[in-house]
Image (cartoon, rainbow, N blue to C red; front, side, top):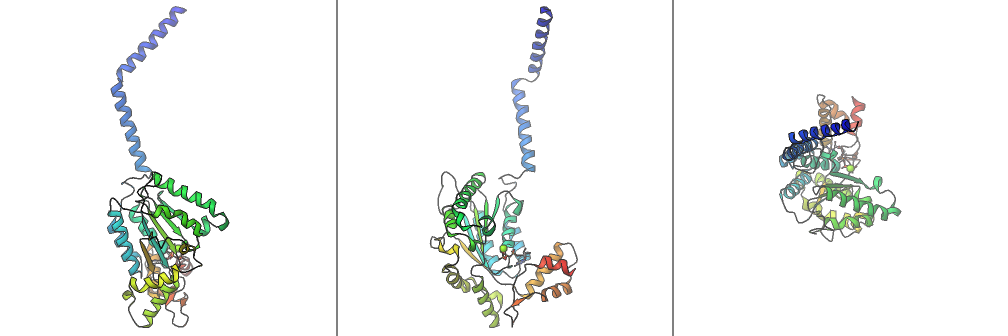
Length: 331
Ligand SMILES: Nc1ncnc2c1ncn2[C@@H]1O[C@H](COP(=O)(O)OP(=O)(O)OP(=O)(O)O)[C@@H](O)[C@H]1O
Ligand SMILES: [Mg+2]
């Protein structure tokens, strides 16, 4: 009995030795190493990660998209292209890129944010590195702003630690609690590092309707004087923007010192859209749906929208918003 056990044990030991001999330590390490790196490559191929395979800025794509897909926004197009280009090509930016987009409803603030995201992240708005906050949705109760504040700070820190090329979009910035805005200020500033984390490659986009009225007023003045819309320049709007937006006691955004501290790199005005732009939006939407663009239908739909001022009917009250659902109704 004992002899049999001993024989079995010896047999097992010798078999193991043969196996180990076949895969000597070096080979084993190499095989495991290759396996792991292959696994990593496959994983990286399928799952978005913070590297150049998934995050690579395409300046041409942004330029083409801005000129072909964004209608009636010559000032915004120009500023955005220059700002994003300059920032993404700088290997060592001193601070994160901070853009504040202003304009009437439906003029393309979210739309242009999407174009920016698509030019940087392969996954566009679906990227795990693009984060959208909507004031009324994510921070609905002003009384709870202290809770939101610590959550938001941890969220920003955690995400930038995970990937320095992160993008944060704050929608309805004008409805955000001033205290909450104050809490993100340190991340926008010229710090080398904050608690060991560098925020200098991150991008912050602030979207709001603040200043939309005065931008519309300027556009209307140009129209009344019979001047071309494309003649409107940033300097025609800057002063008004600063007066109506920055001194607006109602707007949380501007009761903070974001402005005085020059943390916002560019203020980007979006002009109200005219009838012809609405037609362009309808035609684009048809193309997107894979149907033949129909000029007659586009005109019909655009004519049924509401325009302001009431007497002249120059600008679309809802911009290009609601066109998607309207098109369902018309077709
Ligand atoms: N200037 C534009 N050029 C092309 N399409 C546009 C433009 N503006 C708006 N659109 C279309 O209308 C839709 C709604 O626009 P978007 O959500 O960007 O408006 P917004 O400026 O964010 O408005 P709000 O202030 O109400 O949030 C977009 O998805 C896009 O399809
Ligand atoms: Mg919007």
